[in-house]
Length: 229
Length: 334
Image (cartoon, rainbow over all chains, first blue to last red; front, side):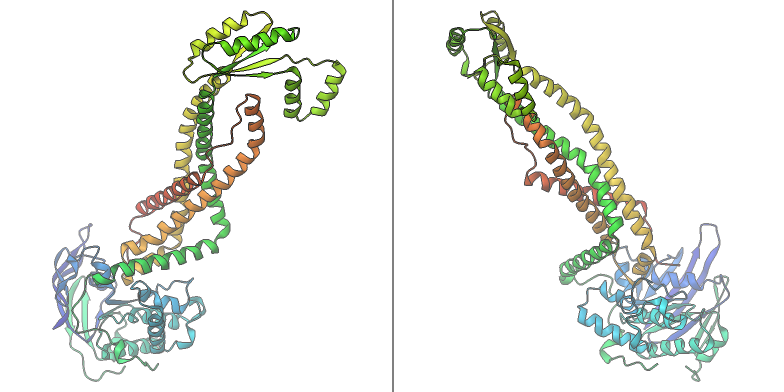
């Protein structure tokens, strides 16, 4: 069954420009897919549609068969708790420790404190930051901060991980590390959609690539089996 | 970067997409969230104690005047009620009036229709009262010694029954004034009427001023919560991104408003207590001089609770205004 589906999605802005033009695509459960294209191609608009921050002018955005654009304000938070989001600038809270940043999605779900601690430790271990939980984000390198952002995105066991330029501020070595993490989560069953314009890095991953240009899906390249995570 | 994620930590990829919380856990979650937010608010306020104190002080000052007006009104009412229960006048005899004349006047007063009680005050008693009420009794005593005789006349406090009207009082006053040996008759209502007039004026002016100050208290809470929202915009956007409900995002700021309002209420109570403490002695002295021995009324547990509730309400109103004005702060980051 398709986890994510866009059916003839068009997003027209108030100034008449189209962020997305009649885009249709389907992404299977447990797969890792890259979304690429130049700035303004529509990558971020598509990701915003998937987190419910934008609604399509026409068409439907389906997640496990549910139309995200039809979710009301009371339903949207519950949907977002099942989506992990990684952003280029991490969006970490500077006055909270690494542990507290990662624990944030769990605290709003009122999980017992011991379960929060266990799952945060697990997430930090996954991104190899077990010993950094007590530090504040300003004490971490850019790569470490990005990994904290990833830990926060996955700590809630999301069924979908959306990443918008997650390696934009990272060197090639750290970028490969981040991609390796995404592959791990993909292996655990999450569906991962990564928006990036780093073509070399994307090609190395051997995953399906969706190429957007001026809001339209112009190329859909199937992944190879020779991925080098 | 070895991951040791357990099998149980795998996402529920095969479970259906959920778009609402489990019903059975809502109340528990609601309560847990309030506890979490209350704890966060205490931390937030304690980390900014100086600025919080200033907000409390501003809200407290704004609440103090309405609170004092309420206390003043309660006391004026109490004085009115006491006076209504002991309507009367004071008859001052001439200094030269003989003891016989004074005795006759006492008998006559007791026979008058509507008179409930007659309290006779001899010149010596009057002098003693005067000395007791004066802070400068030593000076007065010396002055009296220099004069050589008591300059105060004998007097009668005439208490009428409750059914006596002002017209009856006035008629009696005129009749007594014409009697031999009477120097002056003072209707005790005069000062009270002036007090009532003054009280009405103060109430009208005070009501307008109170409303203005209460609005100011709301605006202080509004500005403070607005600042808190601005300082936590990043957090709000992240919270929206990870699935916090609008109520979860609003709740901390409503708690800030509550904390500012209740803190302001506590501050107002302290200011009012200090103010009442300062005026208690001269007020008692004034009332005693009118034979209206009254305790300051109104500063009751109910009044204290009301001040706290009003403070809380104003704080929450300010917070809601700030949240309404800063609508859209809960949008995810772009």
